[in-house]
Image (cartoon, rainbow, N blue to C red; front, side, top):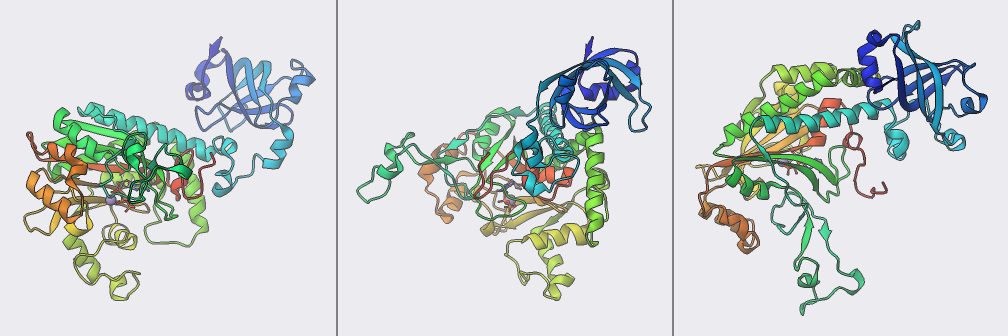
Length: 482
Ligand code: ATP
Ligand code: MN
């Protein structure tokens, strides 16, 4: 007897007509005491299993309810319904896991659709919905395509540590890691917590980025990437920030900022293409879902494209590349700036771009993904390569419609002395980063990299409006129950 995933059976369709099969999954719906929609999570769609009441005893039949787990065996037959090609005429049925009917009533399952916010409070139900099934299958495909892209292009996957002592990166607020007894922490003579007595003999925290370690990897292995969780104690409760998120960070030796932009654009397009080709059913579902949501909202510039259209648009067009200085000129001359409709008016060079400015560039001015490069040194990190003008650094941000910043990168400062000067400007003690500075002493070369937030990319690919809805167990301020 065939035992196959429901995805495979539906894919093969009528080819298997007449075959005996066995499938296992959970009941999506049960109607007329006869038709079970069975879903095993392998695909968005369920298979219809038609129960022959003569063959199933009443006791077993009672266990067939929404959410229960079943094993059914029977024959694949052509379906008379218009909804599906095939169905299973059940000969044998076993209830593998019953659903608690009282609990079920309280959570009011199928077929009503639940608000995404409510679902975040119900982990068991959330993962079984169509929407989240689609999102997490796409999340898998995106991660897989990430590894495939880098592997095919000669990058090595470098595991950088989650617990680190380097606190100079300045990428965000830190979560401390300590085994000291909080009520009885040893103190220094100055009255501060004495971390020399802590587990690692120093202050440590969860990593905000694997970049500095990846740099030393690239200067040995050539091309590396990290892909792991990052932690930032961002206290802003936005729809684009998580306290725990997954970042993809490639780092390439012998590569300048233009090369960095090329890699980033190729990578993003490769992943979108992979998902476009391999997750068609899930994307079609999310596309329709978004169209429904969109029709209820007032029309807004840039929102007339459907999800699939937007993915194709990105695949078919080059990203616009514009220097920070040019971007400021465009923004200064823009209607919303002249009419004081930006919350932060742009009146000169040097200010950081706010979300509203990024969205104007992407959604109104260019109507395309935009890479802004050569930012003022003052508003960027210490490790970015200083340009000859002495006031800008070789940094880039990749901006996407709806999502805003999807990746940030730079050519790194490979020269020892200028790096030391930049650290001093930022008040960073070189002794804290001696291991990093050492890479600049032994055959340092031009190198570059970027960090792409997996969840930001997923927001774009799935069209989900809130970053919490593209990660299975979101971590945000005041929220880490499960
Ligand atoms: P933002 O300005 O959006 O807060 P950032 O400039 O602080 O981001 P970087 O330090 O450049 O972010 O990190 C690289 C990438 O990591 C970002 O482009 C983004 O895709 C992602 N990222 C950063 N912070 C978060 C977060 N809190 N949650 C999810 N993704 C994030
Ligand atoms: Mn950034």
